[in-house]
Length: 523
Figure 1 (cartoon, one colour):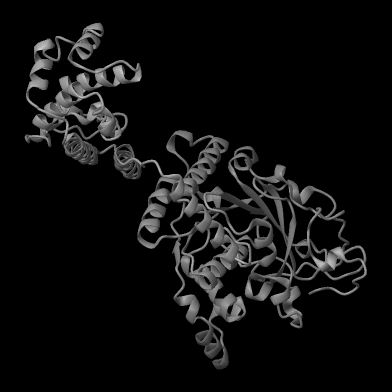
Figure 2 (tube, helix red, strand yellow; figure 1 turned 60 degrees about the vertical axis):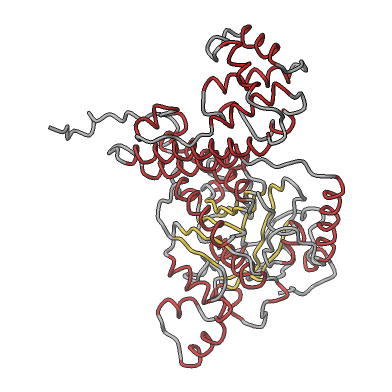
């Protein structure tokens, strides 16, 4: 009778997929003959001991494990050892090398080596034979991986998402270890470099990454750079989601870049409603309630055409794990060539099971995984993050700083850029010390920039549309632009206060703040 107690069930399969059943044992279980070309293996080994230049033709194609017979693996390893020591390769030297390592008898002795060389006349077809041997080895590896996936999938104790991740990694390793990039000629590299320089020259906006659509931010960053992990942090209701969906919309609609948004806090419909509100410039509260006049319906339909065709992909899976995220991003990259990934937000993700129970370690594993994902897919990954309550207890203008990041050590270390979103109006700061209005002002504070300068970039926050825009693009005559309080509407904070921000970072460009003679708000 089958044991129904899950605690007493044992999973006989341990470790990585690659390290479980190996060699003939696996194929005996399958009852089939494994892919192999033993005669070609013998021909290749014989040719290697006959012609001293033959190894250079196959050394980048074959590895010891490419050979099916273990005796052939050991002979080839001995040949590689002689090559590394710059010693000649022939029957005698290979025989001595095997004898020195105690393997000569295992491979059949000197007689077997003589038999290998006697079966061929030249090494003319050695590269062709080597490629066939390598292909058969790849087939065996794929069968091994598939068999182990099949076996483990039947285990009741198997974590299915961990299995999916290991399966992807195992197949990826098969590809990586067998498909190697050859050297490139200087002429080809030079041509490629010149073409890249010309492409950058033709980008008069100076963009080398994925455009954010905010001119001031793109000036400093040259766009979201590929393989970068960007952390956007702010206190709740400061407008983090509004900022990233504005950036996603700009990248997808204006520049045609595919964008993946993983929304762990809001549903996909809520996120789309925000996009519609911003694109059609209809109040988010009206969109939320469906309370639109006839002319507003017409306005909506006339303006969302480009948005509906934009390459934006939204996933609202709650408590998304790192494994799920990686698998979904790989598929989106393969199927739709996404150019940017957005996660809203980091603290709502779940890390590896081994790190659960210690929140700081779990966040560290998540941030490290996000950086690895950015490098693997060669796309910028933008992750939103909450700030600690220490910001609220601080006096003055409550500007965030790196130490305010929750579990800041690992996040700050892994990130290529750390941006803080700050709106003084949120804290009731509606004027600066000289009485100039700050209604609707949004600041992107670049607190860490691994490959660039630290500056402040100024934007206009339009509360009723829950979107950010370049200051010069906003309609400033609209009295509602200064709506304060949480992003997305809600209540308005009316406490009077003065801003005390100190000097701006050097190089920060905003005419309103940098020109003391300007007595008018640019907004």
